[in-house]
Length: 280
Image (cartoon, rainbow, N blue to C red; front, top):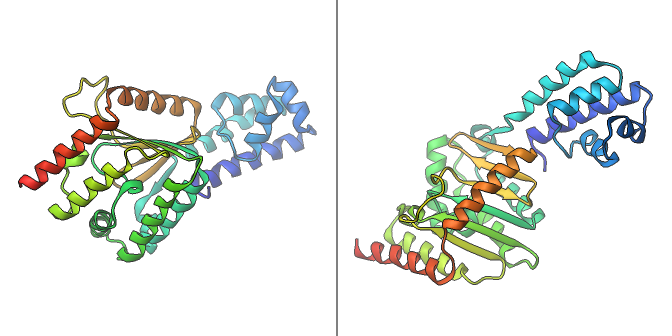
């Protein structure tokens, strides 16, 4: 995936490789001196794994330049925020961002996601998506390319029909009642959710409003192939891939899943939201 964070990680890896070569060591020798698997050296050098402070300090020491550890760790600090501001991403409109998501979802086999306030793009109807994209374009003052953006968002949903994929998605029940657009738009969106229940590639869970919660609902997040976490805020997309962050978000998802209902129970909650719309 091509991101500012990934580019930075690759640049850090290139610097590590440079220090190793200057020390006259090959990857195997360095791994032996550090007591690491050779694959770890390769992943760090090629930007496929994020180093820790301890990794960088050990690397600098073994290659004979311990004074370089601080500079390497400063580079790591620059990566740890892992931010992609929405204003920059949306400078050419929403469609390019949606196209990037199409590629990312096609590359991913398993996703665990949670949303507290909105139906996720993977499950949205065109009408619901249109409302959200128009609202966001107005908020961010970005170019209006709504038609193209909606089409790209719908292309993302093609992965739902691909064998071997699994999308384990949790919604807080409040998201079913957050009015986006007209009653017709919301009714159509809720009907769409009902149709997803039972799909072989989808596990849809809903956390009821009255359910005992092991923790507060938190913000939405997505775990891609247990390799990285993506969190959207109002102004920024954040990405994390450290083992600690993955474990933390994984625990949060697991606890929310324990509070969620699935299958016919989830269907009942959707039907309740649908009836509430009809009554307004």
